[in-house]
Length: 141
Image (cartoon, one colour):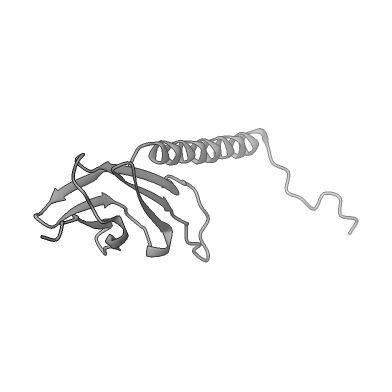
């Protein structure tokens, strides 16, 4: 066979269907990327709790692994940077990339409270939170 005419001709209806599917796929992907960007621009929600000896700052951090997290104490604030990665799944193709990958947040600590940032600890929990334990500085009497 010469190779000519081996393809099944697609009519205008089939071509229109292909164009519609392509537009829908592109639109969904762009919406997903937009949702992802909005999530990346919005600061991480947090709670600041206080005891006699420490502060506990709890950030929402879904899908985070310990190695994805950077925590710093600067200018009376706990600053968090999370760089998440998407796992690849064999046999699946990304259709809606809606989760932000680079997330930031900061939580102010009340001014005038001396703390021990070098003794702080950070823990990623199974329920999708990052807990930063920041001890207060107590002068030895």
